[in-house]
Image 1 (cartoon, helix red, strand yellow):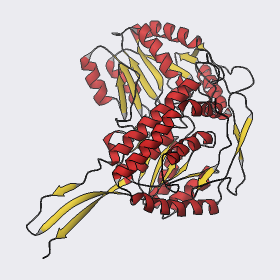
Image 2 (image 1 turned 135 degrees about the vertical axis):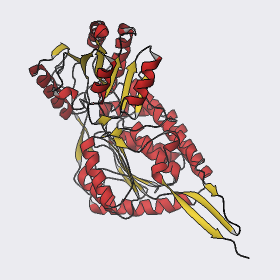
Image 3 (image 1 turned 135 degrees about the horizontal axis):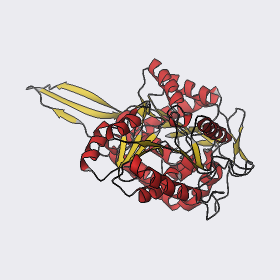
Image 4 (image 1 turned 30 degrees about the vertical axis):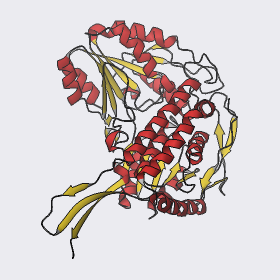
Length: 478
């Protein structure tokens, strides 16, 4: 098992503590301080910006094939170190070690896909009049500022770094203050694979200061962010003032529609595994369970039974199925959601409370008969709470699913091909899974609609935000 190393910033190819006031990093399972996180000042950010400029020029001197080869070597190293890095994620974020290891493998596959897409960033030839050549070429947009959350400390930075590096951009990345060591470990793998040291800079510290300073800088040419909708809206405004393109992967509140023509018991058991993975702290997590009336009671019975059997504990322990929440803020938020739902008439079928008084552990929770005005069915819970509501007819299910401003992911279970077709076209989400709980992979587009953001990561669109199409019109001379 890896020894936890205090995180550092990476500026100008050097690991550094910076010159700002450090901040505590907390183990969510024990509430112990495990490290002091460096904090960047404006002077540190200026150095990172200068480094990103130099790194971009150096990265551009390489061919797409050379860049791809370097990134692929780094990903091989990441895969080899998965068992070593996984406990770092668990110590910082709380998820079970095996979940952390699988996240690392997923991150490697995402970065590998993006790197190879860089080799396929084809231009266009436009039919021309005699004596002219007209064509479009794909060019890297320039240095990118990337901001990532704490719930996926490797795969979320991996999405940002993979797209930007694959397009030929340099990156300044700010990872979450709660999970910094995981990002450092990822970047170290890429450096050990041969990435030029100044192509990636890592900064940490006060989020509001860092984001405003980087976005306003003329060095930064594009922004990519994963996080909450309110923060995303704020960063989008800053980017708009500077006329810079952004990718916004924001919050969700994923509906799960279960019709009465499927095996409710089987679906409920699958739903528990999907809902409580990473303690429900996933933007694409199945969240609002919308169950047709005839299937409702059987679904709830199986769902409650499976949820109450989940082993909650320290993610470093082999038999743990669900770790703690990532921070004390989530603990308070979930307690408030349960209290509000209960006060408005919902039933707590299982769970609903903190576990113990040390560590941010919360019981897997199922709420039934949840009214429309309960906060838990209107605000993304981002935790192990599953509200269940009933519906009668197809149109009612569509109305419930679409009534919120979010539209990241959705799920539905039915044996009707006609229903499946209608659901795919009418449920408002960027991703829809029919008859399973899988979402996107490296080779498929990932992103939302409405207040869940815009832009796509993954699939053939993965480099779009980091490249420009330059049109060239050439008059042929003698």
